[in-house]
Image (cartoon, rainbow, N blue to C red; front, side):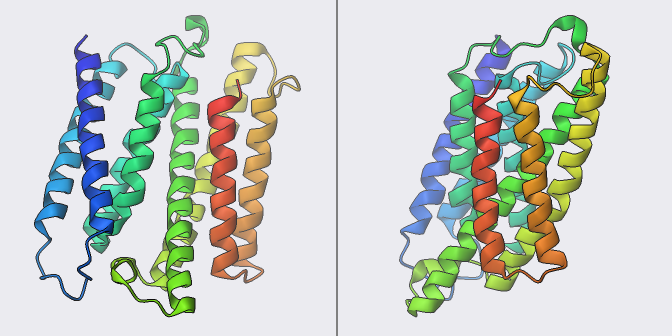
Length: 270
C-alpha cells in the first residue's frame, strides 16, 4: 500500500512540474532579460520535481525489496520515467539549461501515467525465470532507451533552434534554448552511451533466453526481431556521425524517428 501512495504522490508532483516547466515556455522574458539567479518559477519547478523524484525513488526502493526488478511492463515503464528524470537533473545542474524540463517532465509524467493504467501483473514474468541475469538485461536495456530519449529530446530542440536561426525570428524561446553545437554534442553523447547499453542489454537478454528457454534467439518473438532492428538503426546513425560526417540535422531527425520506433517496440510488442 505504501508503494502505491508514493507512486500516486509522484504522479501529482510530476504533473505540477510539467505545468510549471511548460508555463516557462510562455514567459516573454528572454535569457538576456533575466537576472543571474534562477527565476522563482523555475526554482519552484525544480523543488516540485525534486519532491516527486524522491517519492519515485522511495517507491522503486520498496519495489526492489520484493525481488528482481522490472518483472512487468508497468515496473519497466516506471523505471524509465525515474531514470530520465535523474538524467534531466544531471544535465540541468551541469549546464544550467532550464528549458529542457519542458520536454523531459511531460515525457516522464506521461510514461508514469501510462504505467498507472496498467494492472500490476501486466506482462508478468514466470517467478521461476526471474533472476539476476533478467535484472541486468532489463536495467541495461532501459538505460539504453533513456539515452535514446535524451538524443531525441536534444534533436527536437536542435531542429526548433535551427528553425529560429533560419527564419531569423529570435523570440524568447530562442534565447532559452541552448546553442546548436551544445545540442548536437548532447545528441552525439547520448548515442555513444545508448548503443553500448543496448548492446549489453541484448547480449544479456540472449543469455537469459538461453537459460530460461534453452535458446539464444526465438524466431517467434517479434520483440527480439524489432529490438535487433532498432540496434542496427542506431548503429548506422552513430557510424554515420563518426565516419561519414553526417550533418547534425540529419542525426537529430533520425534520433527522433528511432526513439518513436523504440517506444513502439517497448510499449506495444509482447
